[in-house]
Length: 204
Image 1: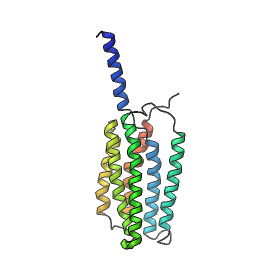
Image 2: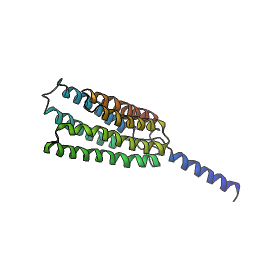
Image 3: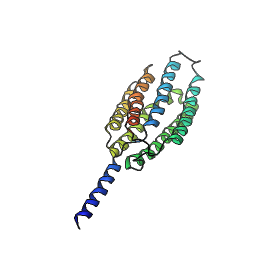
Image 4: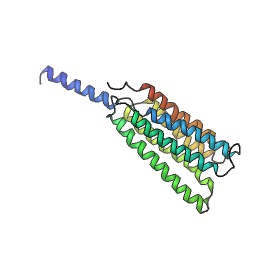
């Protein structure tokens, strides 16, 4: 093998390794859902403590509004997102897969909690969705962060792990949803903002 061939192989290898650890492109989605979750958890806190609503029917309205706004925003973000370098990297392919599975798992927990609450378990059943959601976030963030070698995402995953135990420990505390809102700010919203700022420019 001559020197030219060797240089070509090294060049292709460098390109492949660069693409494998390309910046993650899901920052705008994390930012959007993080913002909505912070608002929903904060509203849930005030409703739970009697500051807003009637103490009953407001909870479905909070979370229905969250879901509708979230899905509509997701559609707009997908349609408006420009093509960017690195979208085919291992980290970004994994990100699309795990963040599809994550909300599906949480939605399944919500449906199960609704059935349990309506058959005698009571509304407190819904509180357990929060640590499950943070556990799902942790898995998604660690997987994508490790593939992309992104320290921000890995740190967010660690924060989510901490939130699983912290919210569970505070499951009866009146301010538990404010704690959850803070956890989302640190593990979803802020990392999403940092990832968005680190994204490469759109392709021409």
